[in-house]
Length: 77
Image (tube, rainbow, N blue to C red; front, side):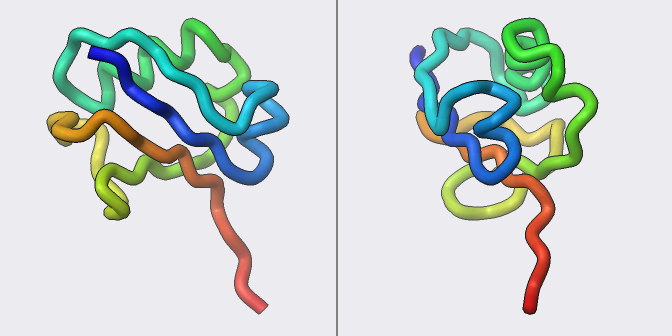
């Protein structure tokens, strides 16, 4: 399966893209993050959350959609 990954904020600077499609055959968010950390090692040093179906999810969440978003901390004002 191919997953569409969307990056926001400073994560676009780290990955040099705002979105990308990656082949993925595992099951959990944690396994996907391992793949993304191999591809973009500097992501390991960044604070972010993962959203699946417009909801923040944990690392042990099963991936049930083909689109995820990586969201850095947002400040309000």
